[in-house]
Amino acid sequence: MATADEVVAQMDEVGVDISVMVGFPFADQGLCRMTNDYLIEAVAEYPERLVGLACVAPGAPGARAELERCLDTGLIGCGELAPDGDRLDDGTPGRSRGLVEIGGCLRERGRPLLVHASEPIGHRYPGKGRFTPEACFDLAAACPGTTIVFAHMGGGLFLYETMPEVRRALADVYYDTAAVPYLYGPGIYQAAASTAGPHKVIFGSDYPLLSPARYAEGLREFDPAAWQMVRADNARRVFGL
Image 1 (cartoon, rainbow, N blue to C red):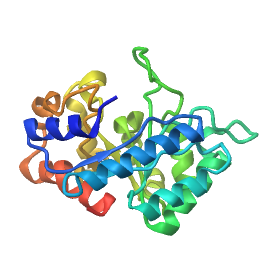
Image 2 (image 1 turned 30 degrees about the vertical axis):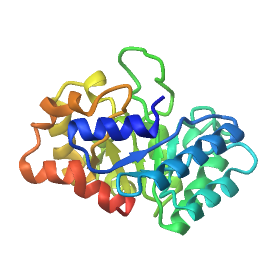
Image 3 (image 1 turned 60 degrees about the horizontal axis):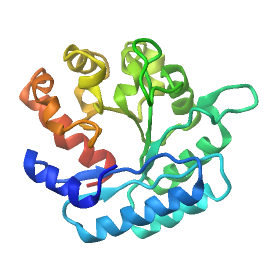
Image 4 (image 1 turned 60 degrees about the vertical axis):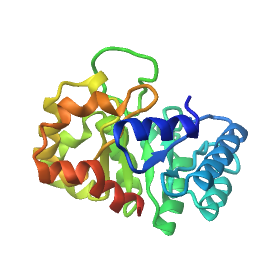
């Protein structure tokens, strides 16, 4: 959807120093491998500007081997996975065997997992899936100790961190802001800061679908200290930058 050159040009335009790039969550392991190879090449071309996450098809043969190959080559985690169709026999999408195996591999390697999440209500759009807060919570509970970033504010999962037992289960969970201007009003930032805390929010743009510039007005909702966490410090900690 965007080349490495286009990403770096956009970064220069809006003042971004480092970007975490992700591939598309193909169900075909061969397409995932092809995308991963491109990301590995892009990171090698722009080592000071770009880092990348490996994408695999958790339910397909060879997923763990492909993930380990990419981690050994220098990619820094896994994502963005979109595991809507990955389920256990009991129908629980957040505890599919393939997804939990990927989570376990990342825990062993000390690397994060980025997962596409969707809000359960609201308008329909291409890409809105069924991996909603309940499935996200099940995945986090099935992978204790694995650092997980749920994209798109976790579909609202952060609101449940006001429940003590949920907050404990989500101790290693973070939320990125990708697509917030498309999905929510700017008040979501303060809601997240007051429930999960600003230390758990990571700036994500969803580029090229949205420009990072689209987020400027809403992000002013954060005070300067919180904004520093969201725009840089949290990502540096979670992704080991």
